Image (cartoon, rainbow, N blue to C red; front, side, top):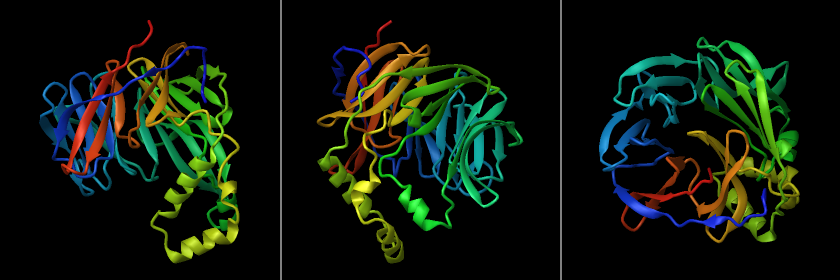
Length: 335
């Protein structure tokens, strides 16, 4: 249970704003005061934040100009421009569809963000038969300017080590960019994140105390069943069970301090593992690390929620009506 201060958290139940019937399989939701952006079907659909009517679409499937091989991630910049990327390509665009630039990387990446004149890239590197997780600042030619994070991983050829190090609940290492600053959340350090300038010089860090939350037997059983329902091939499942005799070994002793991390419009939003029924806890801080709110919000699917203008937005798949629905609710923050 993440309890940073001795105050009671606020419980918020969101309300429906609109049905959005033209979505197929949405991947990411982002928003600002003007538009709702939804990554879906290899592009981004842009809706009015007032009427929720579809305004335009950017991108489609393919490898040509403004085409993506997966539905792209979305980063909204303070200028109002949007930065889109799949795993090899990035596009900077005006909301109206005017393309500022488009670039391809020779190295596939798991996450890419733009900051100042540089990029921040998360990816896997393979050096001298050793696998690493890396987060680097790169220039616009994808040349490394500075390393921010590097951690050795078990090589994929050593299946026993890969599986022995695997956890169903693991610490996050994730970046966010805001106001020409890079925020690096390092879950292995606890409730901790570092702040760098756009060149990678460390400016400060935030390290808050927290109370550890045990992983209950019920939670473990749910996570194990979800894990088993993955689309395993027989050979993969046999190999996994060869090395895992006790499923309890797939869990750390406690939940990590952070489940997800965002920096949006001058606030830091940290999703914890603390839950109350179908509500999940978020701790919201200012850029100096002062707590502005602790709230419990409706459970939302991965990437299908966001914050803007002190509001929480998320998408719900209504199977009965065969449509997606957009919900929102105000969040009251301390000054």
